[in-house]
Amino acid sequence: MDGLNGLGLFLAVAEERSFAAAARRLGLSPSATGKAVARLEARLGIPLFNRTTRQVSLTAEGELLLDRARRIREEWRETEASLSQGKAVPHGRLRVATPAVGHRLLAPHLAAFAERYPHVMLDLDLDDRIVDLTMGRIDVAIRSGVLADSSHRSRRLRDFRFLLCAAPDYIAAAGMPATLAELREHRLVRYRYPGSEAVQPWRFASSFDLAGGEPASICTSMEAVLSATLCGLGIAQMPDFLVVDALATGRLVAIFDQEAPSGTFSLLWHDTAHGSPKLRAFIDFCIERLS
Image (cartoon, rainbow, N blue to C red; front, side, top):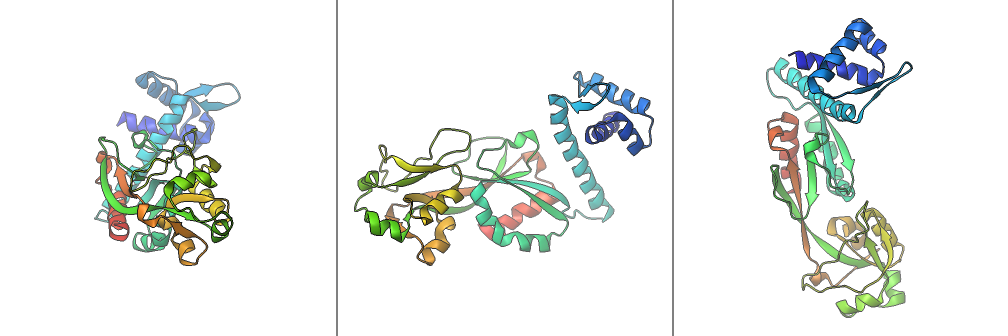
């Protein structure tokens, strides 16, 4: 238990950025607080704070421990709340990582989740970069594509299709391509993976290779790809749930619909967290609403 006590002292200093303020918060003396943190650093064998006469700041190791310690504190509060109510009530913050376009899947169901689980706060991280669940910052992730083998648990949610689309004004001006090969002669709106120079390849049911087509524009957000396509900038390949409204209202037209390949959304979470009531509630809800 000494380690847990030291962790609480560390959290107070890290959040206050002051040993004196942390001591006041905990009802201790600054000297006792400083010695307790020093013992924690000695036990871990690393410095957690950079100390000067004017300020206290976290080292890189301290920043990592702060993320972990906050999660431990939150899980402990959830455990206390569950035990005090005599049952495992979903409670606390649940950090969900999803591709930026994933909010299109979740948004219609968020109100229903909040009504069913009023004590769970969803913290949505909308980012196309792949997050590492082992770092402890994310409880559950929604991923697309084939999942790599890992120690994580997963559940397949739903399939979707990648549709080629263009605005009617663009088709009127440039013409409708008669074959997939003619796509190389058109203006193409492409998606680039954030933080890299890699452009997402277009896939087709017939395994056609679009190599050689030059994009007219490149975006690091699929929402931006949609906006550019709606403005008539060119032809784009986008997931069906992103373009369903625009297709229904005629703002976009589908091209080579029979060539649309499929993709898959899955839930991914760390095996050791499976028993968390809030995580279990979210997984079950997603399976119910999105599968």
